[in-house]
Picture 1 (cartoon, rainbow, N blue to C red):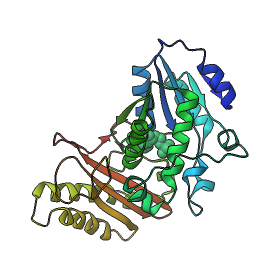
Picture 2 (cartoon, rainbow, N blue to C red):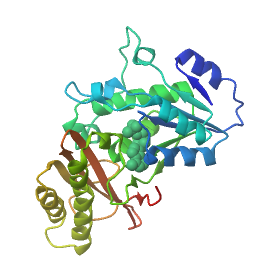
Picture 3 (cartoon, rainbow, N blue to C red):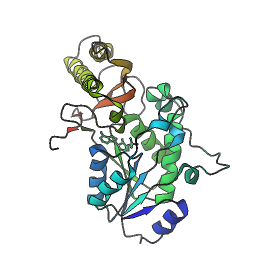
Length: 295
Ligand code: AMP
């Protein structure tokens, strides 16, 4: 496995691969867990060459967010990626990605970028879209792997790939969960033991929302939101940011309960701001994630 830190070296390395070799790519911010590793495993199966980036992207953090304290353990990350037979790890510095004079950003517009996470984190998706486009340009992957855990990120990147005619196939994989249902996240490292127990409330709220969805009362979407909200309010350590039902592609609020739909939740538990979702696919089946059982 090669570890590359500069854009120049990465572009040089990429140019060595023949057109017939399929290149897969997983973009991460490091502090890897089993959610990231499921993307890496799938990418390994489906490509001749597999590249992974580890880059905590300053452009997607707000001024009062956790950029300065975001967890990191590069030696451990590299050890895990080596064990999964990754070919190249790209770990640029912020100055490599945003050199002096950098002014060009990708700005997703409309509800997709300004509602839900976009409302709570202004400018977040501009930072995400910009870095992902830059990484796609540098790595030039045939296939790129993203987690359904970040449902709005998936929608923004899918839209960008369509809108800008990017020659990459997106592969979206289910959310990997702890045995008790908590979605894996690097930010779970911020939780102490009691907060960790309380954090299950996001998953419970989604389960309650799904039950209300399936019960189909006349109140329709408000009943689902009420079920999710009520569950979170019962946990004093959790502070709800939003509980919503939206279209998974446009991110417009749903007027009526129909498939496809996304149940979305965001809450603060102690110092950690956590997000989670259940996806009701167009065919009526649910993607509620995959529980990890083995440890
Ligand atoms: P991050 O390091 O948080 O930027 O995440 C890198 C990639 O891993 C993104 O595509 C995430 O959606 C994905 N990811 C993060 N957590 C999970 C999870 N629990 N299950 C599946 N994918 C995940």
